[in-house]
Amino acid sequence: MHDRDLQQLIRILEEIRDNQKTQLERQAESLALQREQFALVQKQTERAERLQDRAEELQVKGAQLVTGARKGMVVVLPIIVLLLAYLSWLILR
Image (tube, rainbow, N blue to C red):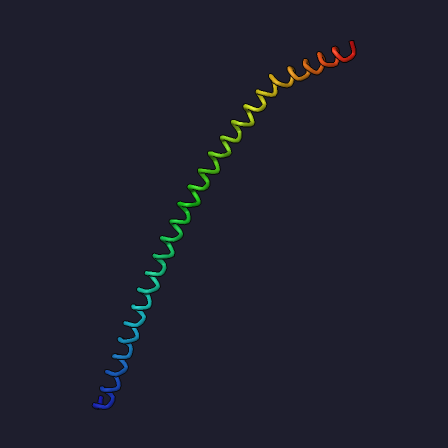
């Protein structure tokens, strides 16, 4: 190999090395961005889970209210019917 060929080979190897360094830097930046995005997704998932838990609690409370209202109607409705019958009796008498 001649000196000129050797210098050209060295230059090419240096370019390869520099390009590899650049590629590694870009990969590190990409990895950092992916980590940030993953952390954001984790926070969003945790928030969604908290919201889901809150929604479930509200549904349970709503179901309890409906159950209580149904039980109350079992008591109140016959009383209303009796009062209407009594009022009708008073009016028609």
